Length: 58
Image (cartoon, rainbow, N blue to C red; front, side, top):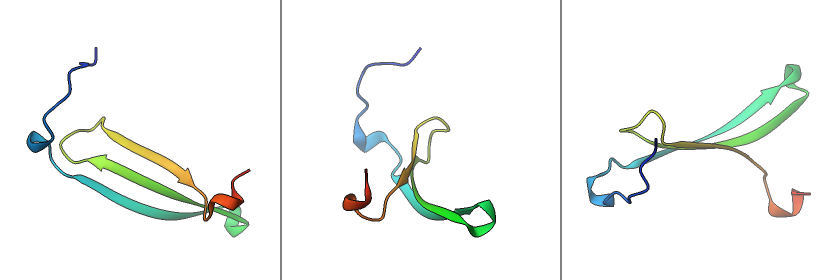
């Protein structure tokens, strides 16, 4: 079960981020991805594929 209480940000390890350009299908297709993680937790992370510009999102 997950706690619904908010943790004090001063007690948390900082967030780390990384950006990736992932190529698939032997180089025929690629996408960008962003990872945001909390170093003190194996379960607190966000991984998302992204677009280069908002006008390309459809």
